[in-house]
Length: 452
Image 1 (cartoon, rainbow, N blue to C red):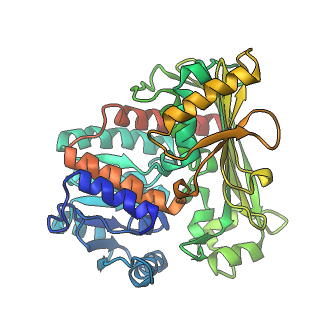
Image 2 (image 1 turned 60 degrees about the vertical axis):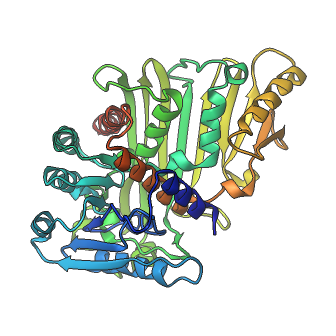
């Protein structure tokens, strides 16, 4: 049994869930992104194997069902999902009327997402939604109403933040809360932010062992959202989660977006065909085709902002395909008064996210290392096997992480889902989650406005 399955199962057992209870019944609403299927990559003891799908039909639905079937028929740890599918123009009304489940999973065309979220919450369903939940200022207005309605209906609205399950990010957060090593978080400046997060993604990649087929609308920023409101959701979430752990944020007074910019990635017709299996651009994409015949997609963005007076910088870049051996990458820098915590994922790290600690305390490296090793020993109580060694390249120390913790992006969906199931059993989210979701989407949408 793989580590990620054990993780989900252990949490379920800790909640007292038994397979025969099956208190949670999933509904999948108009699935269009592969994240919708990854929620079902593994089974959960308290979740019924019968999943009702409501969709207008089409290729997106068929791709979703093929992925679920792949999970059901794989050789190792096959799942047992039974997909009950309804297709028709009235799929939203049918979902609300039949009430075949109590948790609606929403991951698809982002132009529709805020409307779907509000409709599901208004009908009294709990919602687990993929990011981003809002891609325009109008969406953010509707999202605020959805959270109000969720409170009125006593249902839980939550977004899927998988990056909180990535081990190097978890450890960066842990070290940032060891003042003897990190000190305190600097305030930073506009020129030298206290925290920087950069993410590089790729249109053409493999998911669940097969080449990912992207829907054509994924390349339309009016439907997928610009990069500055999409992947940046994860980065802003991590900044809030790492720097202000357990604190509720007020987007009206805690956030000031200083500047933002956007730029396009060019996708050739040949690349578009590889990613979508389509020989031509659909009509709705032709507005974005340049004189060079390439599709110009505004999927890249960067912005600077302050959060409770701390300067932060976020950027996201989309390339078509990663170099051989490489994957999506993440870079993160947190500046403390005694140390910098840096995550790198480049060629020197064999494209595996790696955490480094740099001494800036003013004491000799030999003394700092004693303090660092004491902190590592402390963290071993929770994360057995982690270690610190002198970095092979550059200054500082590398945090060595046992392979068992590197369970991969796809496994993180099960971990987020397990956390959400725990909140459902408790009947509430942590007090800070809802205000911080609103703060996160306010930040990305304010950057969106400034970039234009």
